[in-house]
Structure formats: structure tokens, C-alpha cells
Image (cartoon, rainbow, N blue to C red; front, side):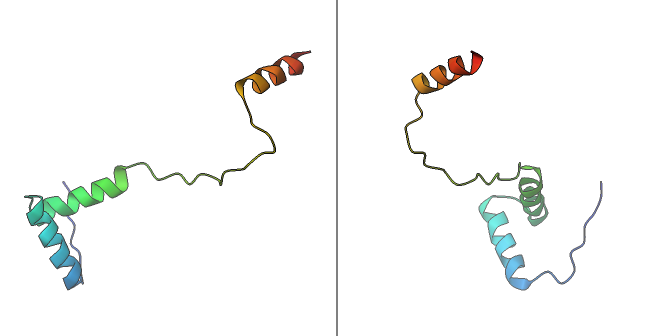
Length: 72
């Protein structure tokens, strides 16, 4: 297993990690690993394009008719 040393770890961040580890009943090392795993393993959030409002309501009936007309 690899090791990681973090130099110049900001004091405020260290304090927050320590408090969060205590709240979650974990060591600071385990808490840091959990945070890294959650950040690196979770799928990235997908940004969807903005909604487009059409000039008419797109119903199932309209889609079925369009499909039929496209096959002729």
C-alpha cells in the first residue's frame, strides 16, 4: 500500500478534517481516504443543456403520427 505525505497542510483545513473525523468516529487518515475516494470514485456530475420550449406540445400521439409519416 502506498503512502502520502502532505506538506504545508493549512491549519484550518487540518482542524476541519480532525473535527469531521471525530464526528464520523474515524481516524484522520481514514477520513481523508474516505473524502478522496468519494471525490475520485463517484461519477462526474453531468451538466445538461438548458431546456428548450417549443411552439407546441410534443405528445405521444404527435410522435406516433410523425413516425408513421416518416415511413411512407
